Each structure stands twice: as structure tokens, then as C-alpha cells.
Image (cartoon, rainbow over all chains, first blue to last red; front, side):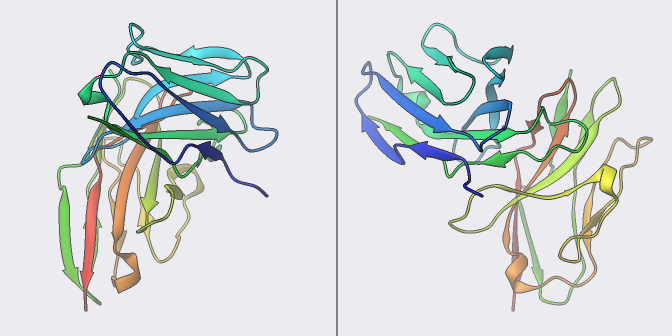
Length: 116
Length: 107
């Protein structure tokens, strides 16, 4: 079974530039998550999709971050304009249907962003 | 509010010693608790979940609702257990993580 795929793996940009990350979840997984993990901290949920609808985006800085999952499969996360504090690993994850009921969440390898 | 606290950032034990990684949570409803692990150069992966009451790689964790804790334990640590461990809570169908504990098992 193919895992969660993410690209690019690494990206270095200057502040005020824009960046986009792409995620392809495991086939058949309805729920897709984007997490931000800053060095030394645990993953922080940015946005959660159920199919192509947003379940939770309460921690997404909407003035600069946006995410979409138009066809309920792949997803993109965009940052525009980037700030220095956005330097982090952006983790995409997926599960069959939410995290409750014992559904396992599977993570991608992450996209490492450095803003200089 | 939904919160997961892992009080120890670093934990170091010798091989063969018992190990306990602490996790406390706050949640007003009925939580589901998990432990995730990240070995060096690997992706974050599920270690165990409280509803399964399972032992994985010798690790166990018991949900204590009175103390709002979900500590991870292993009676005899192995060098290959060295990794980052994250406690996670699933409340309203989402998943929130603690800051993590880096476990180092010394030979």
C-alpha cells in the first residue's frame, strides 16, 4: 500500500515570497490533515478535511495560509506571504474517517520549509 | 479546551531499565488517546491506542481518567527504542499532539 506522498521535500524561500505544498493521501482515505511542526514542538493541526469539506481550520492563520482539497483527494497548502516564523516541517496525514474510533492516522515524510 | 502535556522533553535510561514517558491531558468529553513514535529519519507512526489495550514492542499505556493521564511504559528498555514519542488526543474527530519526549536508551 502506497503511503502519504508529499512534495517538495525541502524548500528555501525568502520572507514575503510564496510557497505551495502538495499532498496525495492514501487511496480511499476520506480525512486529510495538514500539521505544522516547528523545531522542538509537537505537530500542530492547521486544517482538517473530510472529503473536500473543511472540518477544522481554527488554527490556520488565514491571513497568509490557505488550503484546498477540490476533488476530495489531493490537497495543496499555500503560504503567501511567508514570514520567518513559518519555518517548520509541514506534515500531511490521512485516515479512513477522522481520528476517533481507533482510525489510524498515517503521516507523510513532511515538507521542510526554511524562510530566510 | 483540548490539551496534551508531556512534561519531559528529554528522557535518558540505560538498556534494560524500566522507562515511563508521561502524558497528561485535558478534555471535557470522552477522549481517545494515542502514542505516536518517530524513529530517526522515519515518518511519524502510530505506536498504540488506548482503546485497543494492546502491547506493542513491549510498550503499554493505561488511560487513567481520574488522573487524566496516559503514561507510556516499558519494563526493559532497548537501544532501538530511542526515538521521539508523542502523546495525542482525539476529541472532536481531530487529533492534537503533545510537544514530545525524546527517549535515549544508552548501552
